[in-house]
Structure formats: structure tokens, C-alpha cells
Image (cartoon, rainbow, N blue to C red; front, side):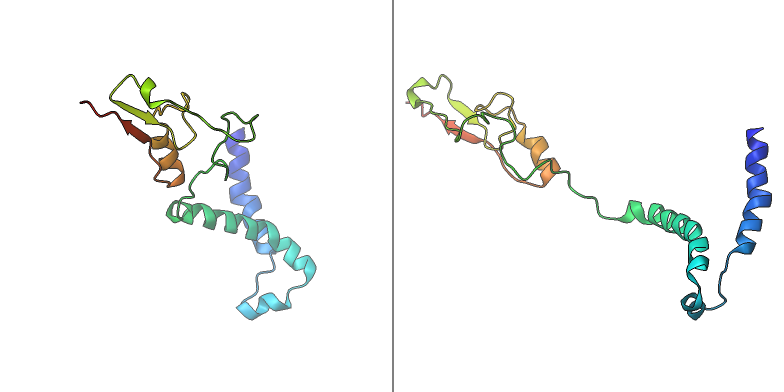
Length: 135
């Protein structure tokens, strides 16, 4: 039943619709079309525009996904300014990495969230690495 309906639309109704369209012989003929003739052409022109867009869409440059222009999206938003103090004497390991992309789930310590942030935004941010000199 469904295929018969689709077949009828394609074989009978679509050709009848296309024959009734006011398609001019020349490009200049489009300037002489009336408003009602343009309105009858709109569905066909819309479908052609959509098909054209879908055809060239894979070749269009990809837009980078950037969630927001803010750098800090969620860390300590209740504070007017985010400040973290860490005493150098309290460093337990020889190397400690601190987040500079504001995306770390363990902020202020880096969890390498900057890698995904850089891929999404084209940024080049990395961690602040503090090295403890071993004497």
C-alpha cells in the first residue's frame, strides 16, 4: 500500500505538478514572473536548494565547537575571583602539574582535560608544571 502510494506520487502526481510550473525559457523570463507564479515555484526551489546544500555540505569547512567565550565555565563561580595558593614546601612529589585551561575535574591540579579542550577549540593551552629540585 505504501509503495503503491509512493509509486503513484512519483509516476503521476510529480510529472503533473512539474508540467504546471511556470518555468520560463530564459533567465530573463524569471523577471517577468508574477507573485503567484513565484509562490508556485517556491516548493520546487526550496527542495532544489536543500538538495544543493546537502550535496556540498561534506566539502564545507567544519566549524570548531566552542561552548562559550568564557574561560572558566564552572569552577568557583560563586567567588568574584578564583585564587589558589599552594606552598612550595607542601609539594610531595618532584613534579606537580596545575591546570591552566579551567576544564580539570580535579582543579587546580591538571587532569589533562586541556587535550580535549584544545581539540574542540583549536587552543594550545597546557598545564603549569612545577618541578622540585632534588639536592
